[in-house]
Image 1 (cartoon, rainbow, N blue to C red):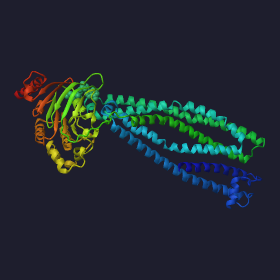
Image 2: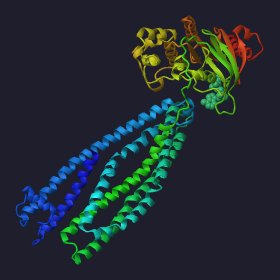
Image 3: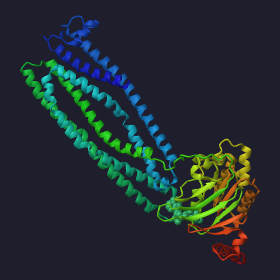
Image 4: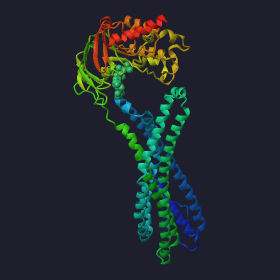
Length: 582
Ligand SMILES: Nc1ncnc2c1ncn2[C@@H]1O[C@H](COP(=O)(O)OP(=O)(O)OP(=O)(O)O)[C@@H](O)[C@H]1O
Ligand SMILES: [Mg+2]
């Protein structure tokens, strides 16, 4: 359809050039216009009866011009509208593809990449691709115009046209010279926009720290530096880009000059008449314009290539979260966990988990304690395969986690991560995140277990209270309790609480603790905690130190040894005692 419409636009150009010829022939008294195709058509249509009647021909030419241009504008509207829509739809599709591929990637990707850069790829680069939709018109229209126009030029005077063809190599050379480096410049420019976005997201996240350390001015300076660098790279691209059209203008000027010289020669030697030269020059002008717009396309394509590369980099990343080739169904989930000689490192050099083996029975409550950086969170991340072990194996209900369908494996596990994450939306939506069809009763029940019901009920809108991005509007402890409720609602066979009550006061913590103990005991629970009071109720305690399982036993057993646990116990309880005595 675009092609047909562009064909019409080019035909309209040809007709208008021909009208110029009729006009020039008509205003020149004594010129016979009867041998001109367009005049013959006018006669056939009954608009003109006498080809020597100048007035009627002129009126006819003027009206034809108006009609041709009116029709042209209708097709132009259609072209602009359709390419605009195509561009917008393309942009939306690219964003969707990027987002959907991003969801498939493993955690390690997100630790490596900057959020701001991703956002700029999704916006600025996609917009750049989108903005080229208007060049799609030229992309269709210009070649059609060139082919039809050049064809007509050959008919009008092939010798002259052959002469004009001498410019083509010059056009190609100039075009190549001016556009070749554009892609590189544009790539740098887009990357710098990514840096600017990355700085903004980082600063907004860290605004509290920036303010408390009075670093506003320093941060502003850093931002200005990055922003100005981006401006510098943008100007470099603009400088390059701006050369393209004027260079083509010079070439066009040379061609026109040559044409006038050659045209005069042909006229003087009687091989071309004046009206024909009029049509010829008008057509040559239109063809040159089409060539110029093609050169613009080339420049735009070079720039867009850079953005497209950045967009497709995201769309094409292959996920390292691969579904197993051999899937075993867990038909009877129990919540049994077995680690066998597990070794894991983030960098594939220094092991963070070093030869750990243990077994957890269904329904057991296991506490992981130990010094910070010991590997507790990492250990819990291995279970849902956020990372894969380097050596050894992890089994849930005697099936290797690598043989589970990833979705089914993760459905077996509910997590309250160390860093509480809530989404913008109501409290209810946040709790029901993993189970959108949960009933109000279920939601209230888990909120009660998580000791969150009391504070939710005091909020003016209760469960319908709207939370900002990241749960803005709640205290740290309140957010944690929402996160606990969310995990409990999923009712998975395995529950992992990573420092889930660290932001709670002793009283709230013991209420949550009590609720967890009172909950139906049909799940295996792994509690990671620094506060030893939290882990008192655990069936067994694992002490993880420098990636190894250093000690194992019940609270009382470990308390009476001379290991890490008893040291931790003594420091924590001594502090308590001294606080008590003070
Ligand atoms: N994404 C990561 N990339 C590289 N190294 C990491 C990553 N996450 C953690 N580490 C490293 O792995 C080690 C174990 O970290 P982990 O978070 O498992 O400790 P932890 O026992 O949970 O500590 P804490 O009690 O402070 O939460 C640390 O030395 C840490 O620096
Ligand atoms: Mg941790």
